[in-house]
Each structure stands twice: as C-alpha cells, then as structure tokens.
Amino acid sequence: MFKIVALAIVLIFLFSGIAKAQVGIGIWPSEIEIEAPFLKTSFLEIHPFSLTEKNVSLMFEFQCKNCEKDVNFFGKKVGSFQYLLDVEVNPKNLEISSFKQEKIMVKISNPLFLKAIFKTEFFGKNISIPLYLLHFDKEKFNGRIIATTQGTKLAVSLSNKISINLIGINKLFFIISIAFFAIIIALIYREYVKKIYLKYS
Amino acid sequence: MKWLYITTLLFLIFLFFNIETKAELPVINVSIKFVPYYYIIISDKLWEGIFYTNETGAYENVQYPLLSGSENNNAVWNYNRSSLNTEYWIFFGGNIAGDICHGATSHLCSKPGCIGPDNVQINISYAKWASSLTNSFDSPNIRDAVPFVIGFDNVHKVSVNTQPNTKIYLRYWLTIPPNTPALNYNTTYQIRIVPAGESCV
Image (cartoon, rainbow over all chains, first blue to last red; front, side, top):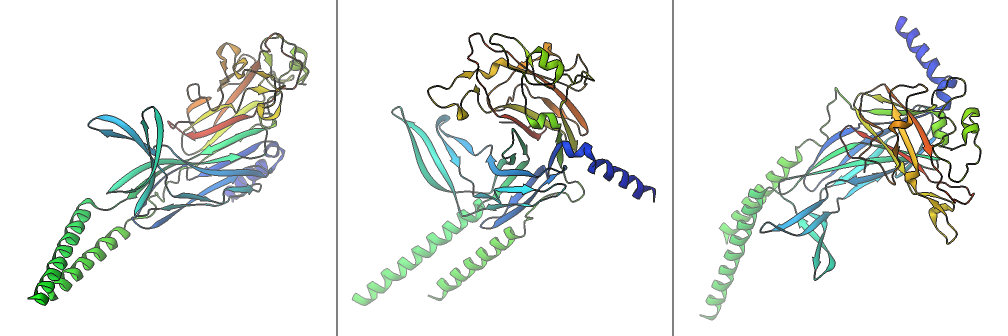
C-alpha cells in the first residue's frame, strides 16, 4: 500500500505544473551491440520517450563513426575506403506525445558485397571510385542513432552508441569454396576435352 | 561423370551447413537484466532560448536592446531577480553516465541562414558560457566562461562523465563588438548528449 501511495505522489509531482514547463526526452537502449549475420537483415528497436506534457518532434539519423578506413600499400597510405553501410532508420521523423514512448526500427542489412567508395589523390586531383567489396570474418563498425528535436528554438539531440559486427564470409570457407570451384571447372574442362577427343578419334 | 555429381553434392551440403551455422548467431546481443538508458530535462527558460539583455534587463529579467561595444551582457535569466540563481539548467538522469556538449549552428546573423549581401554577423566567439554543478549568484561564474563554437564543442564539454541525477547549471554572456549595426541577430543553440567518453561531433 505504501508503495502505491508513494508512486501516486511521484506521479502527481511529475504531472503537476513543475513538469509542464520543462521539456524532458530520453532514449533506450543508449548502448547496443549487434551481430549482423551474413546475408541476413537484422533489426534493432530504439525507444525515444517524452517526460513532459509538451509534444516533441524528433528527427532520426544513423551516423557511422569509423566507416572511413585507411588503405595502405607497403606501409604507405594510398587512399581510404569509405564504407556505405546499409542501415535504415524508420521512421525518420516522429512526434512523441506527452509521457509516451515510441519505437524506432533500425534495419541493418549484411549483403554479400559491401558498398564502399575508394578515395585517393591522383596527380593532385581527388578521385572517388565506387566499389563493391567482399568482407571476411567479423568487421566491427561503430555508429550511433541521433535523435534531434525539430522546429524548436533549442535543438536538442540525443545520441546512442551502436556497435555493429558484420559477419562476413569465413576466410577458410572462402578458400575451400574457391578450391572446389577450381577443381570442378578443371574436371568439367577435362571431360569436355575428353569428349571432343573421343568424337574426332 | 558420377564422381562429379557427388563432388558437387558434397560441396552444396558443405555450403548449406556453413550458412546454417552462421544463422544461429544471436541477432541482438543485449543484456535483459540491464537496459542502458538516459534522459534529460531542460528548464523552461532554456527551452525558450537564450535572449541577451542589458544591465537593467538582467535585473528585471526582461530583454532590452544592447549597445554596440557593450561587454558581457547577460542572458535574461542568468540571475532570477528574486533568487539570483540561474534559470538555465539541464538535468541528466538514467542509469549510465553521459557527456553533454553544446554549440551554435552558425555565427549570430541578422538574416535567416546568414545569407544575402546585407547580412551582418557577430562572430559566435563573442558569446560565452559557463557551467556549474551548484547554483548561486557566484556559480556558474563569468571567470570560468568559455567562448561558443560553431557545431559542438568537443573540447570544452558542458559536462563530462555526468552521473545520473545530476543538474548542470548554465549562464551565458555576449559582447557586442564596436560599430555593430542595431539589428536582430540570431543563431540556433544546440545541445547534444552522448554516452560518457563518446565524441559529440
């Protein structure tokens, strides 16, 4: 009973004029680690919430923090890869009503090839080459979802931390697969040559 | 040709089992017992925006025009006329520690978007701020004031490793350079909260 009364007091306090004037927003989970399986799409749920009687409009975006990686050739930097991760936030804009919690879905696709842009300098000119790269084993990307208030004099943004472990092709499996294919092609070619030899002999 | 089919079949079985093994990986690796979250509450006066005023206005908590060449003009609610405390504060709550950063989106401009030949701007470094964990006439103090920057100030954060249930008090000052035309100058003030140790930019 005491607990119920205590809770009621807290709620009265929260819903009173004290809470009305201020603006409170939050987010959970604020830290998350996800393993995105190879050739699969993973989903994350992010929950923004409001702690005041004012409705708050938020805009959501994904930001990758270590998607640009240096490319070295014999220890010398020759350029950089900028990975374009297939991460989508839905919805991108949302209005949170007073004392409500909403749900944002984050879609993380892990395709066979990762989109990337190779940036380098060639005779003083900056060159960008779009590429599709195979990725092996586990590649870790750090990013965040940023929720920013819209249409307000004060732009408040809440950010969480997302570690994405993209599971790629197993290196051993890849080598064995290539070896298998090479053997099969070699055998097919041998059979083909044999057939032609038998046909004309 | 029989052995060729057997080899291909074996390869496909190998491929199938490999993909199946990867699919067993957990999609979301979040502890059920501990869901990290945080929230902030912003004081109503801060949410309304920062308006600078002259000496009289600072005593009355009213905005009055500023004189060209005047130094360290107070924000309207730097000193509440009855308590002499600041009415600008941010409350940080949740179950993780966080860092709070802020900044401006542009210099103080007379035209929206800072564009147009007749746009006049005041460099944002003329605006200063100070933060404190205590609220009194002397704290936050102009002696600790730091100039504003465009974007988010990752060097001088408002608060570093902020523990849950902490209130951070702020005060703001603005110096008007000599020969500044009497116009309305605006920018967007922005605040960002990140998990402790993370970069704000």
